[in-house]
Image 1: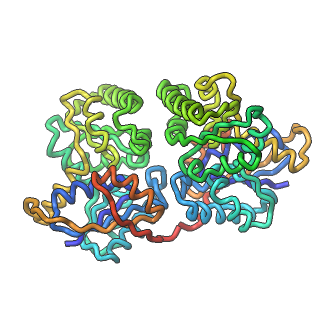
Image 2: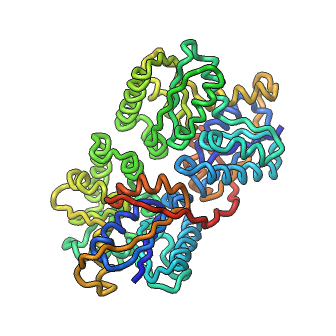
Image 3: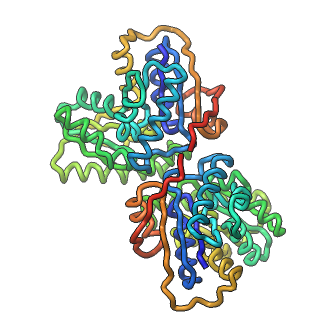
Length: 265
Length: 265
C-alpha cells in the first residue's frame, strides 16, 4: 500500500510521523506545497485549487490512498480533492471530529486552529453532525512560535495563557461544559505538553496526528505495527533545504532526500 | 504621474500611506499579491517569478513608476523586476540603506527584517556599498503579532525585548557601535513606538515607509505636498474582504474598493 500524505508545509509531518509508527509496512509519499504556503490565510477557491493540484500530483506518483494532513485544506477543500482524484481521501478534520466524539461525555468540545480553519467552521459542522457542540478559536501566533522553535519559551506559555483563558471565558459565556480540546492544526502537537499545562486537567487534549494515524490503520485493516522500516519519498514545491531543516523537527527524525516539484503558480 | 506600489500583502500600505501624504498630486495603483504571500519564507526563484508578474500587471494598468514596497521582493528580485518592466523601479532596501547612510555617524547600523530578507543579506550588501557595516537580524514573530493586532500587548513588548537584547548582544560581540536601526519590513512601522521603547535612546530608528516616500518625491522632483486628494486603485490576488479589513489598519484610513486579479498560480 502506498499512502500519500499532503500538507501545505511541514506541519503534516507530525501526521506522517504517527503513520510511520502506526503502519510501518506501508510506503509513503509526502508533499509539502511550500511554495504556496500558508494556506491558512487564503480563500476557499485558492485553497481548493492548490490542494486539488497537489492531490493529483501524489496520485500520479503512485499514491493509492490520500491523507490530507492539512487542516485548512481538509476544512475548505475536501470535496474538491475527492472530485479531483480516484482514490480514497481522509482528512484531519473528520478524524479529529471522530476522536472528539469518542472522547467527550459532556458533548461539548473546544477546537483551536488557524484563522481560515476557524472561519470555515468545518470543525463545528463535523462536530454538529456527531451531536457535539463545538466552540472554535483561531490562534494565529502558535504556528510562527513553533516555527521559531520557541516551544518551551515563556512567551509561548504567555500566548497560550491568553488564548486559553479567552477560549474558556467564551465557553463559559456560551454555557458550555467542555471536556475535550481538539488541536485543529498539525503544528500544535509540538506544543501539546505546553497546551496541556495551560488548560484545566478535566480537558482531554486530542492530538490530530495520533488519531489520524489510528483511523487510517483501522480503515486499511493494518493490524498492529510490525517491525518493518517503511520507505518514504518527500516532495516540496519550494526550497528543499528549508524543508529538510524545519521538517526534521516535525518528523522527529532526519529527512535525507527531498525532491523539488513545480505545480505551477 | 501614475505610481504603482507593490507588496506581497498589506504591509506595503504603510509605504503608500507615506506616499499619499508626501506626493498627493500623483495617482496610485496598489497591488497586494495576497494569494501568494508571504514571500518571506520563499526561495529567490519563486519570489522573483511572483514579483516580476506582479510588476508587469501594474505597468499594464498604467503605472509609470514602480515602488517595490516589499522588503523580500526588493532584496531578492529587484533585478528580475527591472528586467521585466520598462519603467523606473525603486526598492525599499536601497531607500533604507540610503537613509541609514544619511543617519549614521558611527557607520555601524542594525537591521531587523523577515528571515528571507536577512538570509539574502541584501541590506548588508547595500550598506557595504555605502561604507556602512550592517548587522542583520530576523524577527519572524513580529509580522504575525502585528497582523494579530497585538501592537500594545505585553507579549509583543517581551518578544521585542528578547529580539533586541539578542541583537545588541551580537553587535557588542562583533565590536560594532551602532547608532541606527533600520526597520527592514513594512509591517514594522506599526510597531515603531514599541521598538523605540525597546532599544537604547542612542539608536535612531529608520522607518522605511517614510524614507521611501521622501526619496520617491526627490526622484520625481515632486516639490512640497499640495492639498490635493490623490486617487488610488487597489488590487489583490486573494480575498478582497480580508485585504480591506486588514489593510485599513496599515493605510491608516478606510479602503473602499479592491479589485480581485488572477496572476495565475
